[in-house]
Length: 368
Image 1: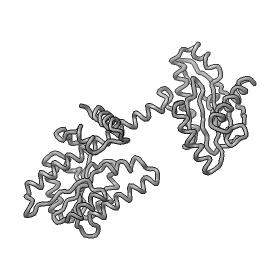
Image 2: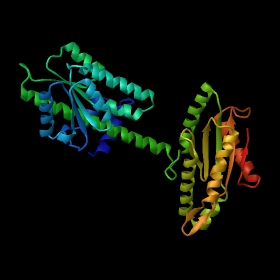
Image 3: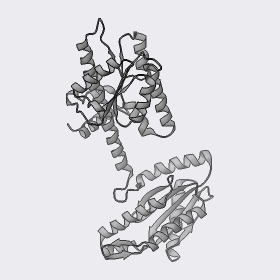
Image 4: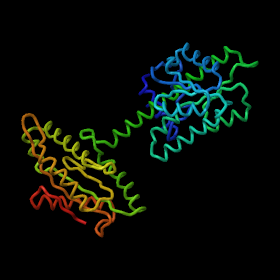
């Protein structure tokens, strides 16, 4: 079973059981540690104040082909470990951490990691927070009490391994390191693959496949989010529908493949003009909707003129021909006496576009 099929299978298991996300048991049910693959540049971080223990663990991981020797990082306390953790966040597959260390112990290291994840979420770095949450932290200890073990698990450690002692032989320690590392790294990689598959499915459901802008299905969600923000904070929301004048002639003259090329280039130029918080939606055929938060009429006019001038100065090349596009636009706004909802906003922007076409095309009209 390939990785993508596994990820989809895990998602199906979660859906059948009514869960929003797969459980630990769901994922383990479709993975096999015998399929563990050594991936160059995927790293493991070993945190221990004993140089002998770090060397011992590195040897176990390397000789059992879990990681390349150069991909096994070392730190002698939690503070140094946290620094290397952040530096290698995108590449880390595993952390093996001692409990009792000078300067900063293992439990404090875990707390720093969890605080870091919360900080990432508050800053909007949801993907980095997700990556951090998938990295398994396995505590290594020779003396931890049951309370310390439970505390470590509650704080976010994924597992415990007991170091060699009177009760634990060296051979047993090595087997624990290998087996538990394989289980948790395989689980982590499956979670990542599931996340990537989920993102691809999400993208396919909201993106127009030809032009790469949002599709009409996603438009309602954008409006609901922006109107909710508008109702909380005030301001203005503008909607502008832009239509290519006489686009049918392009299809009739040059063929539909040429028409597709024009649509793709048109969307690409809209992307260059838009601000990072604006949205572009393929509204239908050759019509594109721009949702423009905090943009007043003069701002909408400025954006329209920049788009219009772009096509007048830089024709689109189709074969040996150069097509100079002419565009018309219609815009409306919230708040406005005529707009009570996003349906009204769209209806009035569409009416304004109709007026622009009726008055000679190649212009922008407002209705609000």
